[in-house]
Length: 457
Ligand code: ADP
Ligand code: MG
Image: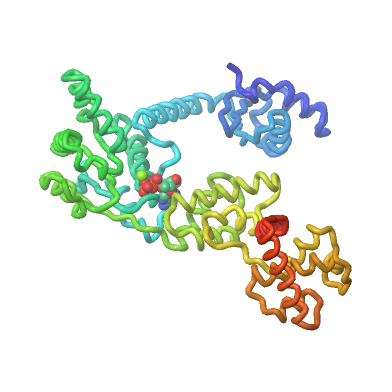
């Protein structure tokens, strides 16, 4: 099946020929013979296989790169990087690509997330030691730090770090067999093996004992489940005695486990125990900047600072906050950069779930005036006709009810010299509400509710 760029290559060439005032002879000589050799989601590989390019390849790349990129983007509505290769480079390009594909397959069958690597893991004071331990275990098959036991609270990077170790081993040891499992998967497989009988159990043992590195995540969920714990213990022992690497994560250190067999507890503590801590401000900023880089998005330092200052519990939430801001900005602004206002809006549920918008007298005057289709000046005037005076009294009442402003301040904002006018206005609305209640009516109170909602939205 042809991919997007190959499929549209004729149209792309046509656009190059017609839309950029490239001289026809240049187009014919340098652009027309270009072919799409390969493409993936973000890169198009273009082959320069004609003799013509032998001494002109850098000229072509420099002169036409932007035009080609632009045409591809216009025709396919997608942005790609371009990579040019010559006929001589094909062999090594194919070999590297095969290697990558193979690595990707190995990573997939080891249950790894392709994005969780050391490259994307930001190192700060909170995780410097644990990262060093992880790297050391990843690098040395014969490590003394076996098992490596990583512990810390949720969303602090344990899973990311474990996947990084596994990727590293796969990349650097071409024949290493690596397996990452969550404790939940492990438990389910034990249950399934028991249910299916002996043969399946054999299969299970073959799978888990025939590997060079086992990574088991969130071991706290295995603790206390007798058969699973037992099976894990046997798996652990066999791998351990064979000198295979075992990496375990948990939400707490082994000493905090109750309800666990001592023999397992002591195994956990026999290698390297390493804690991962919550990130400090600088690390949170660095993680956000890394995210921008990876997503090729731009958020101003002011916004990153706002997120990093206010979301400080864990990295999962930090990433969640980042995503909310960029998502809202895409909805509202499409092509422009997010503002601090957008960020505050996007995060108000996370950052200030209990704090209502601060309501000011100005907002109240604004909303009341527009609700009654008056201008602000009219509302602040001394016009006594009821269609102006009554909304004005409602504004007085709401200012008293929704803000902590003094009567004097309310009077001055509403253009009144004397605060007794305010007292009178508030009293009028209170009386009306009282009377309305007596007569089982709700018109005014409903109206006030609607206006209040408008004010606090
Ligand atoms: P845990 O397993 O401790 O609950 P995760 O490894 O799932 O935490 O991390 C939560 C999210 O935060 C993931 O998306 C992960 O990529 C990200 N993350 C955690 N630590 C870092 C770090 N040091 N650098 C970059 N991203 C991180
Ligand atoms: Mg995890």
